[in-house]
Length: 255
Ligand code: OAD
Image (tube, rainbow, N blue to C red):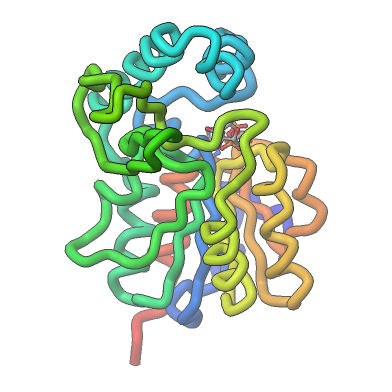
């Protein structure tokens, strides 16, 4: 059960796909490739954000301390771009699986909020490893709040300090409680489906190893191979939305 290509050359390959309906505690581990079809550029590769911008200038605490206005201008541009995009079928398939199976957990490296926008009322747990473009925080008075204004305004907190995006920038540590939630889900899952991540940013990239070490079925959905590909039981090459739609369609109806 490995390296199935989408579209599948022979229909019988469909039957080799893990049937999502058979699993109760699926973890979807997602990255920028899932949102690419919504029109949000990925980070790496041709057209990627980090080919256009230096993270040292816009996405680290040092840049913010040096020039918070330039860092906010960059994030305001991203907020405007993301606000103009909508969830795609990939997000919707995951939301539907989560609606049917409330123990399904989404662990995402994405900061765009599209999983939440696709979620059917109530939704299930969404663990945002790298924070959210739509949350701001004050590191002086420790305020954290949702903020969906575009451009973000005001940029200063009531205490007078600059607010910053509540995002895990380069060189920032991940939040301990968030890592714990992700780890707990991976220690309990019965299927791991990774979607659209290059698997090069640590510590996020190594989290799937928790599920792998437990011997649960693991699936990687991506346009191309990643450094983690050899560790997955099944690798599906194709667009996230199409492969996920196919996986959902391949599920066997409940008796
Ligand atoms: P990357 O940009 O590094 O990788 C995107 C992956 O998605 C690549 O492996 C592509 O092959 C794949 N891909 C692109 N389009 C796809 C599609 N339509 N269907 C399936 N796969 C597709 O993005 P991430 O792995 O998410 O950090 O990057 C990890 C972190 O690096 C991000 O969370 C971000 C960045 O710096 C923060 O924002 C803090």
